[in-house]
Image (tube, rainbow, N blue to C red; front, side):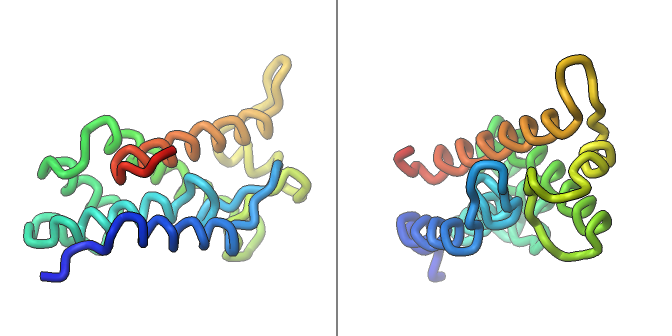
Length: 160
C-alpha cells in the first residue's frame, strides 16, 4: 500500500494551484481553486483517504460521503468535520447558482461582475438596514473560506 504522499508535497501542489489558477485579489475570489475553496476540501479529503486507505469504509469518490466516513471512523476531528461539511455545502450551492446565473462553468465571485445582487438573492441574502445582500454574501464567503483554510492547516499540521 503506497499510502499518502508527504503533506508538504501535496500542500506545495495545492499552493501552486491557488496562485496559478485561483489568481485571487481583493474582490475577486475563486471558489474552486482559491484560498479555502473547494480544492482545499477535496485535497484534504483525498489525502486522508490515502492515509487511511487500508480502511475500506473511507473509500468513497463522493467528497461529502468521504468526509462523513472519515469523521465517523475517527480520522477527522468532529469540529473540523462540521466546518468542512457546512463549507462544502455552501460552496457547492454557490457554485451551482453561479453556473445557472451566468450559464457558464466559471467558479469566480467578482465584485465587479454583473449579477452579484441576483446571486446574493439566490443564496438567500437580502438588503437590510446598513448592509446589502452582496456585502452579506461576500462576508459569508470570506468567513467560510477562512474556516476551511484553518481546518485544512490544522488537520494537515501545516504551519500557518
